[in-house]
Image 1 (cartoon, helix red, strand yellow):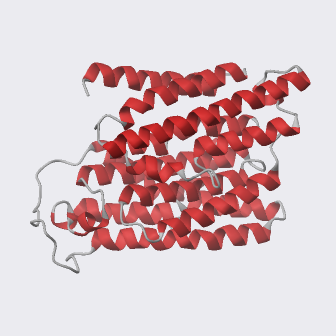
Image 2: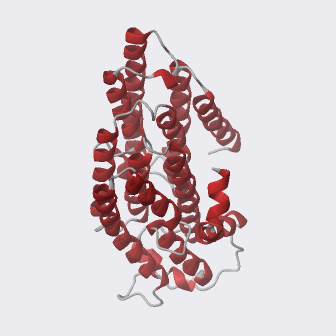
Image 3: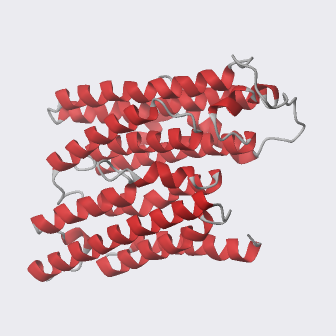
Length: 346
């Protein structure tokens, strides 16, 4: 893809996101979401592989349906209340339709089926955009309407997402699919807390973005698409493999790494809201995700593959590691000690 085209798509993505997150009117927010969808499609299908074309088609159909539902929900609300303001979403049916539309846009269960397939058909860098930047506008819409949403519905979807994200990721061998199910599981944690503490859901999203970006960029540097390649990557980039181990454990939410912070705060907030059983269930379900993170971590640090591989072993490369990977990995691992500062900023 030529640089001018890339620049146009990147600018459109930035513009679409900015329009959605800064708008007060539903039509403007919808316009931003549409610009985003149209800008990411060429990036998904740029390899012209049948799987990439299939992924782009699936993505377009799902996003178009979700956008139509957003429009329908806002029109229903305007019809009943005379309000087009995003924060004035008060009609119960509109709230229900909007929750379904945003869940579809984000890939929350039970509307999650498209996400692993689309991620598997995209390059790693586009996969990173789909997992982080493309989820930001829908999350901000949830944030702005959080007072009107149905907590019981969101809690059910959240528990379902965490369960399915964990279970379906267990037998995967493709790193992109594993990260897709990881994303679905993390979205469950955000959805469960958004009605009680919207700022905490945003903090969770920021830290998730940080850790996922570190994991995607590390895998991209190592050119790893499946577990069998990951097993032999130690010979090429030993330090990066060790750092990937820590990033994955941080994504799993193990102390004393950054990923533990949002989980700890969410469990604390749920307990304050007298939802200790829900907090217990979602914590136990996150153990499923922990299993596949540990599997990835084990594969990234194993020093000899347990079976003979068909490709030659690659030895150390002199190519320097990208600075952004180094910064993101450091932040993904070491932010827990400064959590009091993060909380005062919030």
